[in-house]
Length: 286
Image (tube, rainbow, N blue to C red; front, side, top):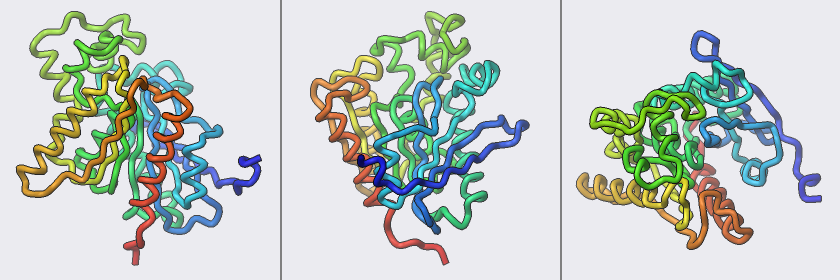
């Protein structure tokens, strides 16, 4: 019944040229959106996909007047084997570049609907990895805030703590999407390469406000990943003489999905409310 009461959003597709990788984004806009705030909502996996399907979080954001851009960067499924297989060995580079390019293309194509000054990023797992990267990348000014849900932030540290260490090698070094050709065990040079591909390597550039959501019993991406990012950000900002604008919520007993009814509702509502509060400020557009 609640779904029927929500006004249908406008759906637009944004696609990059084939010579730039051919990635695509689904852009959902509330009816009548004009220079509205937006968030880049990034799927995890990375071999998954953003779909035009029901999502509580997306519905809440749209009902609050926030547009949602859902990128399908290279590595996503549903676009052919070559598209999916392009990413392993290039995380922290190809996927980040696609997200930035799709953001810019969406702002250009939907310039009357989206306010370029009021945008954020939100993702979980590998989507959190990408959110952390976007907050610290060269194009970080595009994103005024970010929500990270059980994010991967330190690939070398993941090797000895995650329940799928072969994923780290396959995605961060050279392998296929299934991990069959993963380099194992890794050597010293491999660890340096994994660090270079980790968003923790650009933590000194992060200035935007951030919300961290962590499942304390997560075995896929242990909560120490998110904790280390928060701690590093606080230390870096302290050295620069400015406090870190970061909030962390940890859910006892929860795993990667924060899947309990109470925990999941709390996490989703916290993420949406936090984003809406920071994105619905006065527009700076002239």
